[in-house]
Image (cartoon, rainbow, N blue to C red; front, side, top):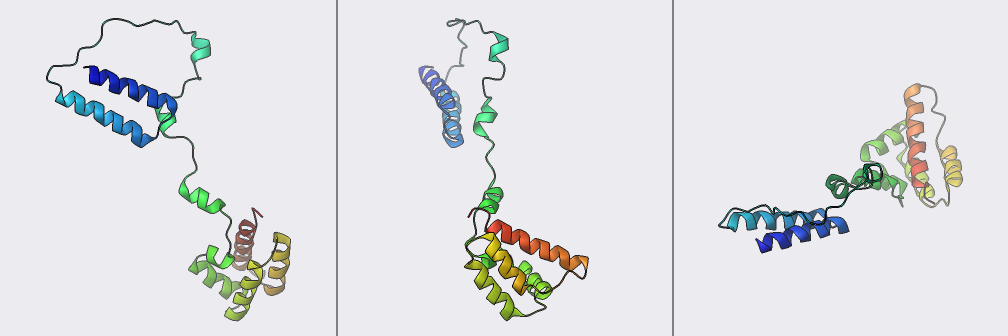
Amino acid sequence: MERLKQLTEKLNRQTLEGASKEALLEIGFDIIRELMVSEKPVEQETRVQDQKTVDPETYVGTVQSLNDRLNPSVPDLSDRLQQLRQDSLKSAMGINDRYIFMETLFRGDAHSFDTMMGLLDHAKNFSEAESIANQYIRSVQDNLEQAAEVEKFYGLLRSRFSSI
């Protein structure tokens, strides 16, 4: 019984201190193991310790639930990876995007595509990269599909230079 009381106090203390999920779960498992090992049933305490009156007006909204403590609103991995600055524009795009950009924007000219990518990787800011891209990308706004690809390419270019 004393061990259960110690584990319960430890769980409460760790919860208030904002311990990790793993640490809280381990303490919970320890409590379960202790309950399974104990030979006599656990009796609930009948005495009330230090009753405190709480004004509901001030209390509501000030205490986080256990769920809120365990699951803070942290962006997931995909959000964090999208926000990271890419050192190379070519490595930031997938193989399908590279193929589509080369075929759509450069009419299959791989040498021009690779040359422009090398220059874009050495550009110092977005405006410099945009002027380089404008020199290399031929006039492809003749249909909506190509215009969408141009916009997608410039979106990748913006994300490459977003944190510089």
